Image (cartoon, rainbow, N blue to C red; front, side, top):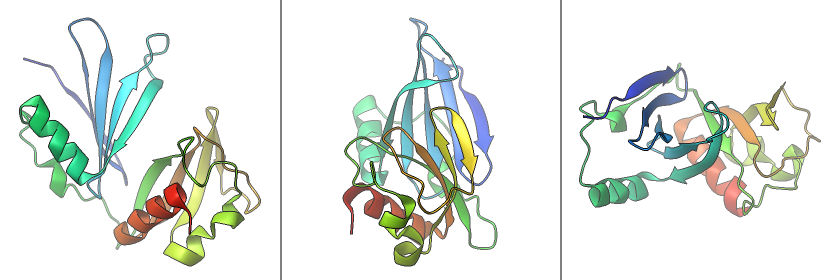
Length: 162
């Protein structure tokens, strides 16, 4: 039986990690909105991810079916960590995202989705309350606040553009 380690991520969701038989550490972050991030940790730094793959609800259900179903008994799909209708989420900017190379102002994220970027994690350093002219780069992580619907719209905007 696999030994899962559960970590609650306030305002984000929950992370489950385990170590494979060959010593690789992998995990899944289940976000409040149903999105899941598949994590593959670095061999050199057990706290750093060498790969993060974001999956929407349909993709995670499909992957679960391919892998033979879930043995985790908690109903993660219904996980909600909201404070008076607001939710915090972490969005990992991929190379292919429209956002990469643009500034926060360029995205017009708050105007278009109602979601605010409250912090930016760039090359391991956290920048709280980034300025509107802050450039966004591939591999940055955006800490955002908004409604679940707004965050879903923000993900689409940041990936594909207006």
